[in-house]
Image 1 (cartoon, rainbow, N blue to C red):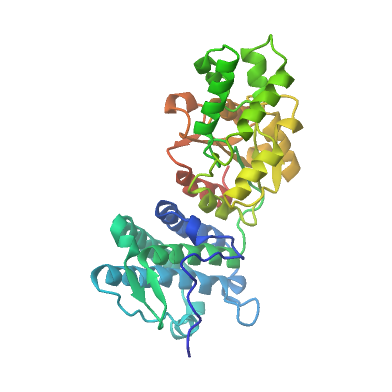
Image 2 (cartoon, rainbow, N blue to C red):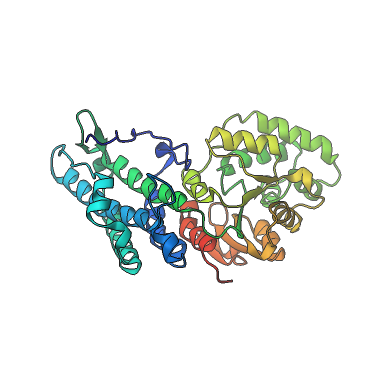
Length: 382
């Protein structure tokens, strides 16, 4: 029986939302390393009949999905090793359904499956982390005309783990993740520095002093603090005009799509000092999904470091503040989230470590949040 065709190199999965072209190797490996814990959380407490029962004809049981993902990492480990050492090797199809029946996926002991999944995922990630820049483009062939690169193999293996987590069903849905936008989802630092420096020079103010009051604050609050003698509303319009002149100089961070792929089926939102039309424009330009909840500067009386924005987002999501995880980059945002009673991960994209000391966790890059977010969503401990 001829197996179905492989996804293309630039595949976009409409079901789980993953875009291969948006998935960097570093984000892919962090996702893969997070999967064993996520599968363990989702499967270990299922009743035996639910764990092993197929919910519908042609749909695998949760245990069978876990067995399949375990085998994906073993198979793709071998595929990559061959592709790195042979010239365009011909790869054997996995024959998923035949393998599931032959190896009796539905009768395998769950602890052994989970342990093997962890070993295989760790081994695969370790191998992929050693691939050099020039090796990512090496390719192999499966069916005639199906030539795929090493980079595609890593992305495909990442997709398999994520997609089947969604097939099994979401984990804990009583916890939410809230994201700041600038410095977290959107790399706006260079453009905003130019805008505020230009405005400060225009008004004979110290650009460095003005800049120091911008992080995590609403623009109108910054203007009120650094230039109380000016008409804040008029100056805000001027700043917005300067911002419009920057055009598309506000790219999303490379790993933003991978982080948000964890959010499918989970409550999440953004809390920003910006304005909704601008925020949505930038997220959509980066092919990121619209947030289910978006609290912007117009929806609060007091901006960060006041907790009002984060508390409003939790209320809109109908989630307790203590069950919210916040991803921030600015000290004012960290303070706002902590005051709201939320757990905070700070990303060192715009501020040094010592200025983010109030956060519960501090990481270097956005993709470093992946295992922390996965653990938060799937754990039941406080």
